[in-house]
Length: 437
Ligand code: IFM
Image (cartoon, rainbow, N blue to C red; front, side, top):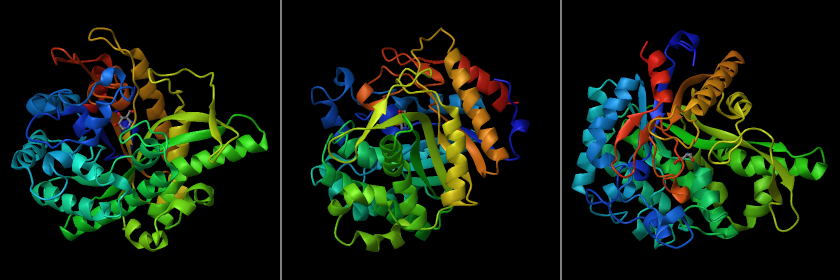
């Protein structure tokens, strides 16, 4: 990796990202049960039925982990707060231990000269709220606003940036249409409601944080580039529809106050009554846009019910996830999102990285190549005029990769899930050389 900080604009920020359930160890510190615990306990949902009960035990090892962030030379640490750790029942009585934990964590970042970038929801919904229908329930925005207020009254004075919900596509589509994440539903009506309520909840949380005097507030969406598998008109239409569902639905809501026609074709009849009146909330002004990017899909038409989209095989190299390595997609999203949606707002690449079958002592060359090619894509986007202000690697350390358990390793730091020993990988050393220079 032959970059220096001078190869990026003055003030460009580098960072690393994690999330609460994936690293903390949910059984510690009085956190309440979540829908990921029950999803993982159901046979067939998660590889080896693994869950986040212990994860990386960051709950106890947070100081060592923040030392790794500091020693890497990262400017920013993107972390999430766990709703169920703060409010074990989802609403009502806060867990003092949980609030103390995030207080220590934020102070720990500041003491090490690292900017705390908080996310309020990275997928572990309190079970009590899941029992009431979770994201399908129209009361979610109220519950989420209350949770936002509780946690941000405690740490909002010290976090550098905050975003309400990580990857609304995963919360809505992946979890309610594809059934791959908790709560594991495959239901079009549930999907429509979840996708809309996630955006309304986002807007409510932004309003609450503004009312607390907070600034530097953003939205973090995941994006997947879609290329038609052939020139056939029906494959082209399928790729356009895929792009609308995955990428443009959320941007359309956040920045234009409208959902794409290709999504309304399928989800329109299932949206909650009065959904058109919610855009004033959804469009709460933002200070930045977060782009999580990993891969592209070749999309083809499939017969059957809407959305008529399927995947075609690629010839490009794949990561351990089976995801195609396609850095041009990152460049193209950074340019397109700014031109068509977010305008002059700063864009942060809030996640980018790859899973690789690493051991604690083999160099992770493929990750270094992946990061290098994607950083070049960021430079190309900046050269084309996109206002990209930062780049965060997913992830600081190997962690719980949801339905794929602990097998897929995304970390710059290797974690031995028996001893919980942390060992920085070659990619960590490579980044540290120029982030610290
Ligand atoms: O591990 C996930 C993370 O929780 C959200 N973004 C994608 C990562 C890799 O799959």
